[in-house]
Image (cartoon, rainbow, N blue to C red; front, side):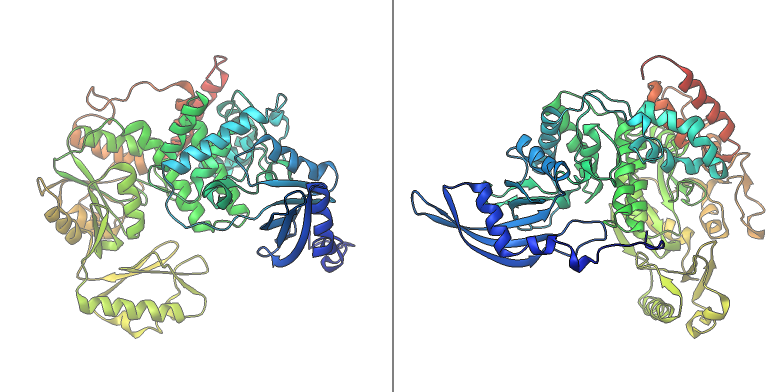
Length: 603
C-alpha cells in the first residue's frame, strides 16, 4: 500500500500509545480484577520487540497486586497488547476462556487491549515427545471448544484459503501452464484432498516459537499469540485442526518430531492423519512462515523439500531393511531431483527406483556437486548408506562428513572463498564448507570478476560453471575418487554396480560402474561419447537405467512392488510425478488426475 497516495494517522499520534502507559493500564487492570484486588504499582518495562508493519502494539509491565482482604501482595509481569476494538478484540478473551490450561493466563479485555501474563523465553532445544503431546492436546482442545459448524472455505477463492495456496505451491509442475491448470484441475483436487470432518476455529500460528514456559505452572509450556491469526486478514483460511498440528512441525524441525505429533494427535483425538493432508499443510505452513518473514527463503525451500521427501519415504521405503550389496551411485540434480517446484526435490518415480534397488540388495549412494548438508538430508530421509558431496571434496558416512582435501588445498580454497566474498555483487554460499559455490545476480560469476582472483589460475583448482552458479573445486578430487573413498569406508562389497549422471563432472563416477547410464536430458560433452543414454529423462531415465541392472522396471516384481495405494494417495503421487520425464510425462499424469477427480466415491 505504500506505493499509493494515502491519508493516514502518523503512528506516533495513535491513541494506543497513551493507553499503553502506567496510569491507564493500572485503571484497566483494576476494572478487570474487581474490588477485591488493588493494583498498587504499575511500572512500564518497554515494548516487546519491534512493531511490525501490520502488527499490534504491545508493552510489558511490572505490576504489584494486593489482596484487600488478606493484605498479601504479589508482583507480576504482564503483557498488554492491542487486540482490536469492540468485537474485533473481545474474541481474544473468548478464545482464552475456552482454552484454560493451554494458553497464558488472560485477565481480560478492556478498551481495545488484552491483559495477560508475560512468559519468559525458554531454553532452545529440539522438541521431543513432551512437546508433541502438548501441541496435540492443545489442537484437540481447540477442536472440542471452538467448533465451526459452518466453514465455507470452498467459496473463498482469491483470498488465499489453504487449498488455494496448496494448489499454487504444486502448480510449478505445469511450468507455463500453471495458471490455467490451477482452476481447471489443481484447485478442485486440493479441495478434495483437504476435505475433513470436525471443523474448528484454527490458531494459525502454532510453530514452536509461540510456546513459552509458564513459571506459575511449573514451567509447562503455554501458547501465546493464540487468537490473532484466525481472526485476521493474513491467515490462510482453514478450519481443519490438522493444519495447526502441521504448523508445529514446520519450525523448528527435529528428527522424528512430525511423526510424534501425528501419533500424539491420534491418541488424544482418535483420528489418524493421512499423509496427503499432512504434506500439503506442511507446505502451506512453510509458505506462511516465509511470507510472514519468520523463515528466510532458503529455509523454506529446504524444509519444503524435506516435507516431500518424508512423505515419499513413508510410502515407499518404510518396510525395507538395510541392504548390503554393491553400490549404485546416483547424481542429484537432473537425475534423482529437479527443481520444478522452486526447490530441488525428487519424485515418486525417483523414490520408487530407490525402493527397487534397496529391495534387491543394492546400496544407492549419492554423488553430487551439492553441499554436505544436502547430502546429509537425503541420506537421512531415504536411509542411504552415504554419499559424495561438493564434487568429491567430501563424503558423508553414517551421517557425518569426512574431508578428502589435502591440508594445503584447504587453505587455497579458503583464500578463494574469502576473495570471492569481497567481490562486488558476488554471494558465496555458506552451506559449502569444502568446495566453493558463488553466484552473481542469480547466475554464474562473470569471467571478468573471476579474473581478479589469481588463485583460480593455480593448476590445483578446477572451475565448474553451472546455470545458476560458479563452483570451485580441486583437480585432484572428483566424484570417482570420492566414490572409491566412500566404498572403502562402507562394509560389504566395494564395487559399483550402477552409476547414473548427466554432466561432465559425473564422468569419473560413471567410469567406476559396471553399468553406466545417462538420462535423456544429459549433456556429458565429448568425454561421454561411450555412455549409453536412456530413452527417458530425469527420474524416468533413472528408472530405466535401474531396469538395465535389475532386469525389470522398478516396482514390477513381487520383491519391489508396492501395494496399490488409496485414490487420494494416487492423486498426490500423480501431482508429484508430473515432470518425472520432463514435459513428456505431463499428459499421462494429467489424464490420471482427471480420471481420479471424476470419481464420485469418497477419497
